[in-house]
Length: 115
Image: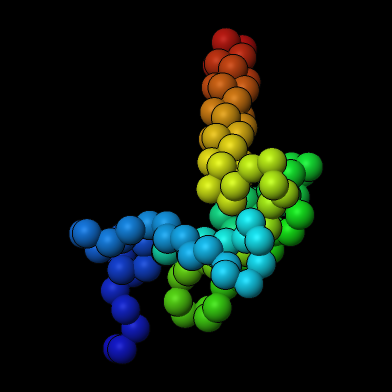
């Protein structure tokens, strides 16, 4: 009865931003990214890819509340890069990995159809 409509959990309202960033004033080269309407799947993917980058000193995420579908990702990088550049790099890599996976899947499906 009082549960939100199912589409409200996934559709971003018009005029709202998917990602926001707040620089940390106490820690050098650190920021918190808030990704709206996402969950542990994306948070863990980005965090694990960030930790593979040698320029990333710290990467962690949390979902502040199970009923609010936001991911807060905290990131600290070396002086060689910025938090925004590190995020862009990781997101490009993740998109490339998904495209590669899709290509491999299509090849395998085409092999199966030829039998």
